[in-house]
Image (tube, rainbow, N blue to C red; front, side, top):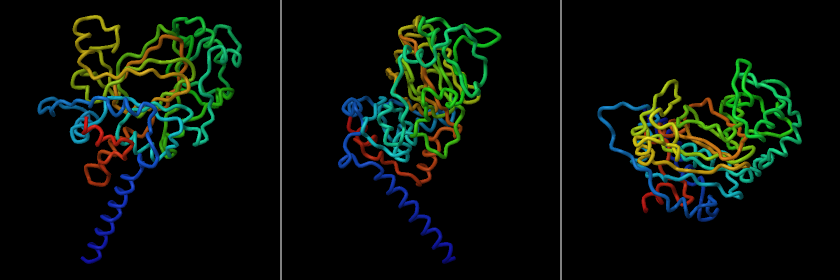
Amino acid sequence: ANDQEDDIGVADETAAAEIEEEERIYDEATEGDIFEDQAAFDNAPIIQVLPESKVRKYSQVVLSHERYYRDHPSKLYVPTLKKNSHLTVEQFKRLFMDRSQPVIIPFESMRHLNFTTKAGWTLDELKQLYPNSQKAMYRYGALLKKDIDIGPAVSSLMENRKLRKTQEGKSYPRNTKFNLKSLAQLDLQTPPFIPPEFNMMLPSLWFASTSEATPLHSDCCDNWAMMVSGTKKWYVAPPTEARLLKPNCRGGLCWVKRLVHADHHARTAAEIRLRDNTQFISIDLPAGHVLYLPAGWFHHVEQEVPTVMINFWSKEGPQFLKYYDRLKRGLASSAAESFADFAAVAGTN
C-alpha cells in the first residue's frame, strides 16, 4: 500500500512539474510582444458561444471548442507572428496548436530554425525557372516524379486562364499531392513549426486563377498553408459556428452548403443573413507567409490575383483535442502562457 501511495505521489509531482513548465513557456515581460499586430489582437472581440444544446448532437471537435471557449475566453482574431519572435517548436505547439489558435507565420520568423525557403516568388520569376509554355495536363492523384515541370501551369496562371478538367487531368495542379523534392529549384521546405514527431500527409500543390475559389468548409486535420506566389483572401470562423452553419460532414470533412461563399458573393437573403450572423475573420495571406489553421475551423478561400500555394495536413488528428483531454484530467495548464495572455486579456475586454 505504501508503494502505491509513493507511486501516486510521484505521478502528482510529475504532473505538477509539467503544468508549471507550461505556465512559463513564454514570458512576455522579458521576451516582449509576440505579434506584429499585438494591439489589434489585445483589443479584438471575444468568440461568442451559444449555451450547450440538450437536443442536437455535435462532433467532438465542436463540443470541445464550445466548452473550452466558455471557460477560457478566446480572441476572434488571427494574429501575425513577429519576424524576430524566435519561438521554439514546443512553444509554437503549446501556444497555438494546443489552444486551437490560428496564426500567420512570416517565413522570416522561422529562419532561426534553419528555414531557408525564399519568401515568395513572382510568376515572372517562376517562369524563368520553368520556361516550358507548351500546353500540358497534370494527372489526377499524386505527382511523385523526380522533377515536375510546372512551366505550362505557370503560363496558364500568367494569362489567368480558367482551370480545365479532362479525363487526362487538369490544366494546372489543384490539391495535387507531390514531393517537395520534385520542385528542387524552389528549395521548398516543410514549415519547421510542424513538430518533427508528427505524421504528415504528402504536401498538396494548389495553383489558382482568379476564377477559382474554395467553398466554405472545415477539415479533419491541422493545416499549414504556405504561400509561394500571390495573395489569397481567407474567411475563417471558429468550429463553434457549426451551430449556425449546419455543415454536411463525412469523414471529418464538413461542407457548408447553406453558404458556399463567405464574402460579397453571398446572394440570397438567407445567405446574406447567415454570413452576417457568423463570426468570420477576414485575412490576407501573401507570398512568404504560412497560415496555421487548426482542425475544425471553417474557411472559404479565393484570390484577386493568380496564386501558388502549398499546404501540409497532419495525420495526427486535431492537436487541440489531445490538449483538451489533458486539461480536463488536470494534466495541462489552463493558463495561456502570457504574451498578453490569451485567457487574461480575453477576460479584461
